[in-house]
Amino acid sequence: MKKYYNFTAIIEKEDEGGFHAFCPTLSGCHTQGETFEETVNNIEDAVKLYLESLIAHNEPLPEEDIIIKPLRVAL
Image (cartoon, rainbow, N blue to C red; front, side, top):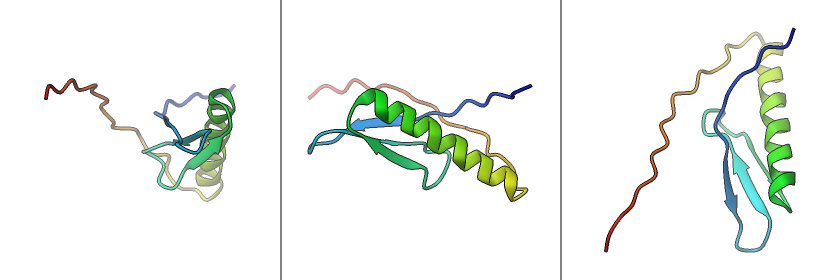
């Protein structure tokens, strides 16, 4: 039976085109893609590989402690 883990991915549109994605909880876990959908698939793969590597090295899986708060700032 598979166990599921939840992590936040941040996806940013690049000025040059395409997208950049990263997972703040997993240091160094970054990827990119030409389309939004490709980028989502790539970050899902990157997170999976990152976690599999931690497991293979008998390292603990991090627990996410992120709060996302949209801000509205008046100028």
